Length: 263
Image (cartoon, rainbow, N blue to C red; front, side, top):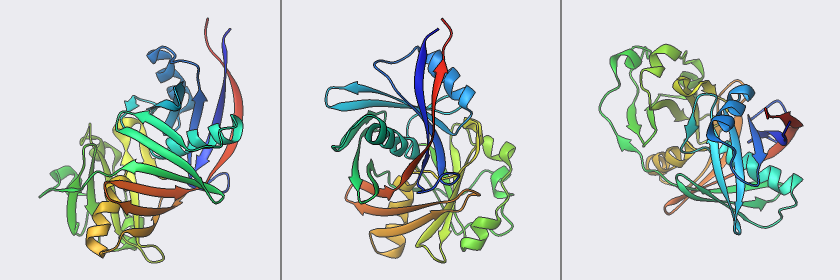
């Protein structure tokens, strides 16, 4: 029976039981796609990441319990952490992904992700089933290639929002984020992806590739302290650097496991 080593890492936190958990498998080559999807479904985490070497870089793919996705920040951070802590990689890392190259470097006790920026595209209205979730209409609306975002009045409105998974799932294949100015942070957010098998994502690096350009325009600066106000919560130090978004964060290993695949 074939076996593989799998790590589970809490990303965007410096302690276990916080941040966003991701499973990571470092492979010699891809498994059959149905097998990778089955592993992700079995894990039932927001993301399971699979990486294989490609010259001096790494090919990287991400799977939710439901399907493969185009872009994921926290599982990229988790993969870099596994390569650094369990595979002896001490140099900067480049990951080749569906959204282009993502670079990760060590920074102090954590890591810095270098992501492509995706500019916010204003939209005029939400579908009525989503608009009905807000007692006070959002202050602004925008989207990128995979998400719709609503800007709320303040942090309390973000924390108090009660999601309706069935309603939000009608946006598929898009998912949904909310954001607002923060109290102790420059901005806060929450993110919901029920159509991808993720009712609420604890900490989502990829949405900051659009939130950072949005808040840069709104606040007139390019460096931010952000907080994702989920139950687990996560802090992200962000910077807009031209057409890239830089995100600093920590990661910690929760588990190392041996998994058994069918013959």
